[in-house]
Image (cartoon, rainbow, N blue to C red; front, side):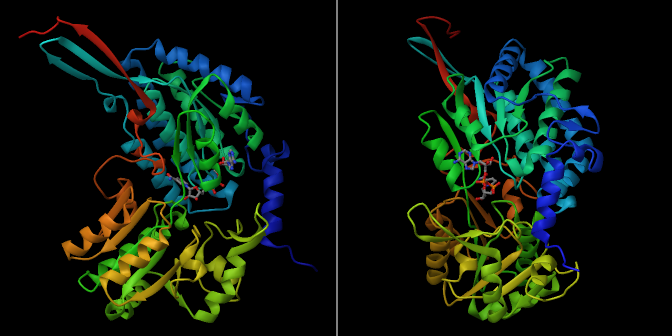
Length: 480
Ligand code: NAD
């Protein structure tokens, strides 16, 4: 009997999920969950934008205290329903780890800033008082990824509502059920807290066409795009104010002063979090030759499986598919059948059978290897040996490809740490910790799932979605 491939199974599941039959088999589609219609989901982008505008008007009419009540309710429901969204996210996309996705939702609920992030400035002098306030843009058009789908919808919603905006989402088609579940969650929270029934909106079948309508619609005042280079470029060319949170390829340097035991554990913990889906996760390592063997041994103790150069080369055409680009040149793109998959599933593709205790595939490569050069978003970690800090920084900066997204370093030498941080110019730089410390998970500071490097907002929060307005009262209103 002919066996069915993983890709064919995924295609069947996708069809089931997007059909009404899916309701019976999995309990949900992009418009309903267990027979309950999801609130705020539309078939027409123009209608969704009109509804988001009504949501915006309702938010504008609210006090800040009322907005904060809705946000508190979003946090509560997110904590409560994190296990549902985590399971659904893995089921629908076939990517990531349920427990890690649950933790990501809790992080969003606990550490996404609310209205406290919106602060006003007052300036007084001989000529009176000038007040600067952070005002909403209006209706925000948000594009969200498949890698952190519901996490991004909830994180964006909290920040955008805190800032007083309305939001319409055009979520990733491959994660539409869980994204719309999150949209519905925000709307349920609004209703419970006395807000409008439809506060944020989405599409039942988002497409590039619906994204294009959103990008050119006169009611959309701000575009916020979280995704790969293609989509970020598209929104930045829209002629509207846009926030672009794009791709990364975070390098890690480990030098000969580092705590190698800790570095080995931290790197594998960070690299395997949600099977490497977070854009901040460790993607390639530059290790001093003198400590590389010890580092590899520590990584193996923490669930890494070392493959040979030949095995790595055999994996390349499996995880990277050749496609003809727009200019007729051949380009390599990551295989969606491998992104976010478990290490044992990827290893099985080259005939290596291991158990679920293997969390990560590691291999020694040279700098030009495809595993170093491409953002794989799966638990495969290439290790390149270097001889000194100059070589390490030079190669790590090149591997980051000027994304200026995220970089990591394990070292106790502050001169070297500073030198790499300066040279790589990334939005996030994590020293001696797993990558997720950079978004507030085991590190200080707030969280976000929209890290806007290209447009400079950085670790976005409510204030990123505001415009500054000034009110001048000349010659008066001083109290001294
Ligand atoms: P993707 O780029 O495939 O898709 C993102 C979204 O854009 C989807 O909704 C998709 O349908 C839409 N889209 C794609 N092309 C478009 C176009 N031309 N016009 C309008 N919409 C378009 O993203 P993905 O695979 O889900 O996510 C992975 C990528 O996103 C990685 O490169 C990752 O680094 C990046 N990412 C970045 C951040 C960040 O905060 N900087 C966060 C998550 C993901």
